[in-house]
Length: 146
Image (cartoon, rainbow, N blue to C red; front, side, top):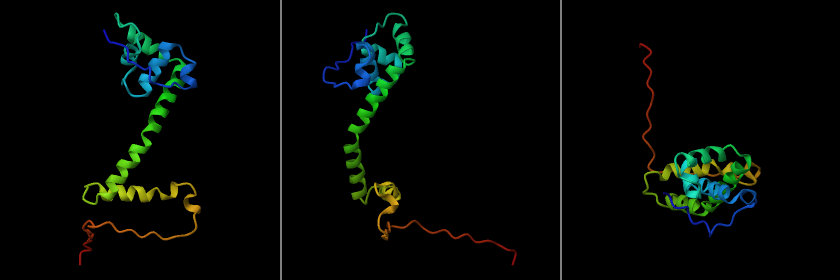
């Protein structure tokens, strides 16, 4: 038998609070990534694991709009918590010019400058960046039969 997960530390949002206790636990477990499927989430939430009960409860919960909203709420909250570590990881990669993906990360970040608040409406400026070593240039030679 699977033991229910301790969620006493979790502050549930309004969508989760609109659910029953077991639905709330189910939604958080699935939204926070503590389980990868509805059946496992149902078991970890505390639903019965006799026979196929957890499969049935997981299936039913995934068809309830208020539970789906609570899952989305939990996922958004968890995702927001990853913003800081994600930025730090990207910063570490960009500052490490020896990393094999350094150039890709720099180019990826630069390509998103227009998506920042203010975007392309910022006063005109020029940003010249060269990433070394440059990849070898391959020339296309066409044989025109001469």
